[in-house]
Length: 72
Image (cartoon, rainbow, N blue to C red; front, side):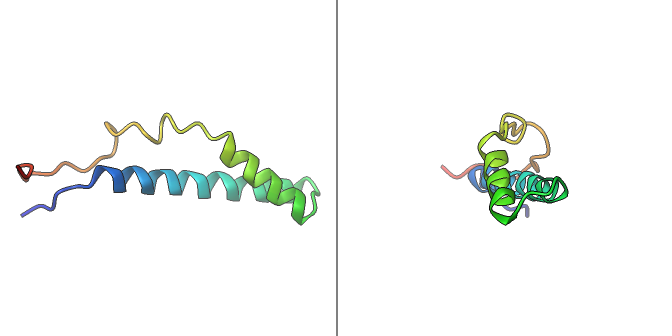
C-alpha cells in the first residue's frame, strides 16, 4: 500500500533544498572572489532573495505518484 503524499511537504523540501544550494554556491563564490565572512554571508542571503522558485514549485515534475484514493 502506497502512502499519501503531502504536497506541501514536497514543496517545502524543494524550497529548502534550493535555498541551501544557492546559498552554499554564492558563499563559496564570494570566498573565491576574496570577500570577508560578512560579505560572503551577504552574498548568500542575496542569492536566496533572488532565487527564482518557479521551477522549484512546478509539482508536475518529480512528484511521486500515489496509488491511494484520497480521503473523503
